[in-house]
Image (tube, rainbow, N blue to C red; front, side):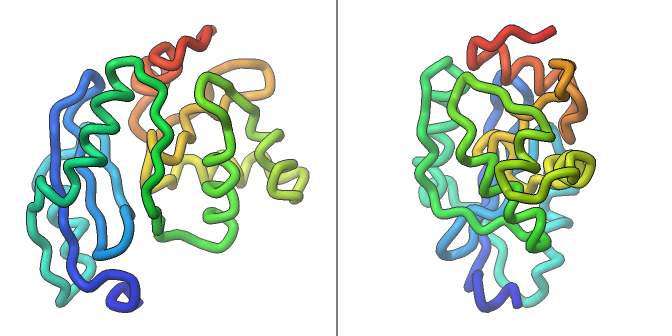
Length: 172
Protein backbone atom coordinates (compact mmCIF):
# COMPACT_ATOMS: atom_id res chain seq x y z
CA UNK A 1 0.00 0.00 0.00
CA UNK A 2 2.73 2.47 0.91
CA UNK A 3 4.30 2.08 -2.52
CA UNK A 4 1.06 3.31 -4.10
CA UNK A 5 1.32 6.61 -2.22
CA UNK A 6 5.07 7.01 -1.83
CA UNK A 7 7.81 6.32 -4.38
CA UNK A 8 10.50 7.49 -1.98
CA UNK A 9 10.54 9.05 1.45
CA UNK A 10 12.34 12.32 2.17
CA UNK A 11 12.84 13.77 5.62
CA UNK A 12 14.37 16.71 7.37
CA UNK A 13 14.66 18.08 10.87
CA UNK A 14 15.20 21.43 12.54
CA UNK A 15 15.31 22.96 16.01
CA UNK A 16 12.30 24.98 17.14
CA UNK A 17 11.08 26.74 20.27
CA UNK A 18 9.29 23.52 21.30
CA UNK A 19 12.17 21.15 20.51
CA UNK A 20 13.51 19.25 17.53
CA UNK A 21 10.99 18.78 14.72
CA UNK A 22 11.23 15.89 12.25
CA UNK A 23 9.17 15.90 9.02
CA UNK A 24 8.71 13.12 6.47
CA UNK A 25 7.06 13.25 3.09
CA UNK A 26 6.37 10.86 0.27
CA UNK A 27 6.77 11.85 -3.32
CA UNK A 28 3.45 13.71 -3.26
CA UNK A 29 2.55 14.51 0.36
CA UNK A 30 3.59 15.05 3.99
CA UNK A 31 2.74 12.07 6.18
CA UNK A 32 4.64 12.50 9.45
CA UNK A 33 5.80 15.19 11.87
CA UNK A 34 7.37 14.36 15.21
CA UNK A 35 8.05 16.82 18.01
CA UNK A 36 11.01 16.08 20.31
CA UNK A 37 11.64 12.59 18.99
CA UNK A 38 15.07 11.16 18.50
CA UNK A 39 16.70 10.85 15.13
CA UNK A 40 17.07 7.09 15.65
CA UNK A 41 13.38 6.59 16.52
CA UNK A 42 12.29 8.68 13.54
CA UNK A 43 14.51 6.80 11.08
CA UNK A 44 13.36 3.49 12.58
CA UNK A 45 9.73 4.47 12.05
CA UNK A 46 10.45 5.33 8.42
CA UNK A 47 12.05 1.90 7.86
CA UNK A 48 8.56 0.41 8.33
CA UNK A 49 7.98 1.37 4.71
CA UNK A 50 10.19 -1.51 3.59
CA UNK A 51 11.85 -1.27 0.20
CA UNK A 52 11.27 2.45 -0.27
CA UNK A 53 14.39 4.59 -0.17
CA UNK A 54 14.59 7.01 2.75
CA UNK A 55 16.78 10.06 2.19
CA UNK A 56 17.36 13.34 3.95
CA UNK A 57 16.35 16.20 1.67
CA UNK A 58 16.39 19.62 3.27
CA UNK A 59 15.73 21.35 -0.05
CA UNK A 60 12.50 19.54 -0.94
CA UNK A 61 11.06 20.16 2.53
CA UNK A 62 12.47 23.70 2.86
CA UNK A 63 9.09 25.41 2.21
CA UNK A 64 7.50 23.36 5.02
CA UNK A 65 10.34 24.15 7.40
CA UNK A 66 10.14 27.86 6.52
CA UNK A 67 6.38 27.90 7.14
CA UNK A 68 6.80 26.16 10.50
CA UNK A 69 9.56 28.60 11.50
CA UNK A 70 7.23 31.49 10.62
CA UNK A 71 4.50 29.86 12.72
CA UNK A 72 6.91 29.56 15.66
CA UNK A 73 7.70 33.27 15.24
CA UNK A 74 4.03 34.09 15.83
CA UNK A 75 3.03 34.52 12.18
CA UNK A 76 -0.37 33.14 11.17
CA UNK A 77 0.49 30.55 8.54
CA UNK A 78 -1.99 28.68 6.36
CA UNK A 79 -0.29 25.36 5.80
CA UNK A 80 -1.20 24.60 2.20
CA UNK A 81 0.57 21.29 1.76
CA UNK A 82 -0.78 18.03 0.46
CA UNK A 83 -1.15 15.75 3.46
CA UNK A 84 -1.56 11.99 3.51
CA UNK A 85 -1.71 10.92 7.15
CA UNK A 86 -1.84 7.18 7.69
CA UNK A 87 -4.77 6.11 9.84
CA UNK A 88 -8.22 4.60 9.97
CA UNK A 89 -11.22 6.03 8.16
CA UNK A 90 -12.52 7.48 11.44
CA UNK A 91 -9.16 9.03 12.32
CA UNK A 92 -8.92 10.64 8.90
CA UNK A 93 -12.39 12.14 9.32
CA UNK A 94 -11.33 13.63 12.64
CA UNK A 95 -8.06 14.97 11.19
CA UNK A 96 -9.93 16.53 8.26
CA UNK A 97 -12.23 18.27 10.76
CA UNK A 98 -9.22 19.56 12.73
CA UNK A 99 -7.94 21.26 9.60
CA UNK A 100 -11.08 23.41 9.65
CA UNK A 101 -10.41 24.85 13.11
CA UNK A 102 -9.30 28.45 12.57
CA UNK A 103 -5.97 29.71 13.81
CA UNK A 104 -6.34 31.16 17.30
CA UNK A 105 -9.56 29.26 18.09
CA UNK A 106 -10.27 26.18 20.14
CA UNK A 107 -13.06 23.64 20.03
CA UNK A 108 -13.99 20.76 22.30
CA UNK A 109 -13.72 17.06 21.54
CA UNK A 110 -17.53 17.05 21.55
CA UNK A 111 -17.54 19.85 18.95
CA UNK A 112 -15.28 17.78 16.70
CA UNK A 113 -17.59 14.74 17.11
CA UNK A 114 -20.46 16.96 15.97
CA UNK A 115 -18.37 18.34 13.08
CA UNK A 116 -17.97 14.81 11.71
CA UNK A 117 -21.66 14.03 12.34
CA UNK A 118 -20.99 11.26 14.82
CA UNK A 119 -22.20 12.64 18.16
CA UNK A 120 -21.27 10.83 21.37
CA UNK A 121 -17.81 9.93 20.09
CA UNK A 122 -15.86 12.53 22.07
CA UNK A 123 -13.60 9.90 23.61
CA UNK A 124 -12.84 8.35 20.20
CA UNK A 125 -12.16 11.86 18.86
CA UNK A 126 -9.67 12.33 21.70
CA UNK A 127 -7.97 9.06 20.79
CA UNK A 128 -7.79 10.12 17.12
CA UNK A 129 -6.25 13.45 18.17
CA UNK A 130 -3.66 11.52 20.16
CA UNK A 131 -2.77 9.47 17.09
CA UNK A 132 -2.45 12.52 14.81
CA UNK A 133 0.67 11.82 12.73
CA UNK A 134 1.12 15.44 11.60
CA UNK A 135 0.66 17.62 14.70
CA UNK A 136 0.82 21.42 14.35
CA UNK A 137 -0.05 21.24 10.65
CA UNK A 138 -3.13 19.18 11.56
CA UNK A 139 -3.88 21.34 14.63
CA UNK A 140 -4.98 18.85 17.28
CA UNK A 141 -3.55 21.27 19.88
CA UNK A 142 -6.66 23.42 19.24
CA UNK A 143 -8.93 20.76 20.73
CA UNK A 144 -9.64 21.09 24.45
CA UNK A 145 -12.04 19.58 26.95
CA UNK A 146 -15.60 20.93 27.21
CA UNK A 147 -14.74 22.45 30.60
CA UNK A 148 -11.85 24.37 28.94
CA UNK A 149 -9.12 22.16 30.41
CA UNK A 150 -6.32 21.33 28.01
CA UNK A 151 -6.72 17.56 27.87
CA UNK A 152 -4.03 15.36 26.38
CA UNK A 153 -1.45 15.98 23.69
CA UNK A 154 0.87 13.36 22.24
CA UNK A 155 3.91 15.61 22.68
CA UNK A 156 2.93 16.64 26.20
CA UNK A 157 0.70 19.28 27.75
CA UNK A 158 3.51 21.84 28.02
CA UNK A 159 3.97 21.76 24.24
CA UNK A 160 0.21 22.06 23.72
CA UNK A 161 0.11 25.03 26.07
CA UNK A 162 3.03 26.69 24.23
CA UNK A 163 1.31 26.22 20.87
CA UNK A 164 -1.94 27.69 22.19
CA UNK A 165 -0.08 30.60 23.76
CA UNK A 166 1.74 31.12 20.50
CA UNK A 167 -1.66 31.50 18.85
CA UNK A 168 -2.57 34.01 21.57
CA UNK A 169 -5.15 31.83 23.25
CA UNK A 170 -5.79 32.02 26.96
CA UNK A 171 -4.82 28.71 28.50
CA UNK A 172 -6.30 27.78 31.87
